[in-house]
Image (cartoon, rainbow, N blue to C red):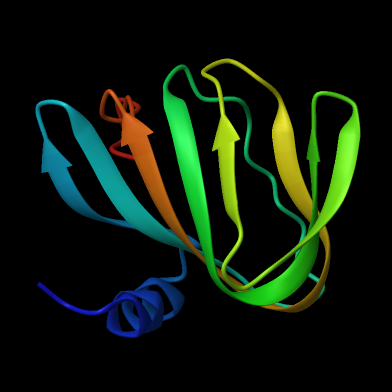
Length: 109
């Protein structure tokens, strides 16, 4: 298995901000990379979600609250709850865990 920075590099090279690296029956995990100034276009997921901020600086909006986030922060989002990162001041590298595994669309995204 690769380290987070190697997976983040592969995500950047793929042209997709999220790259899954693990899928087992009970959870899935990936790395989400948002460059400074990016717009986080994600929509709510059905699954519970945990973010670990590996590095970067941004704000995180969830359930009417808004907070700054930086390396070392851990965030929990219950399934179905709207949330997004914004005001990304430094490239944001996030380790993401979904439980149960994230549902994939028919196109594989």
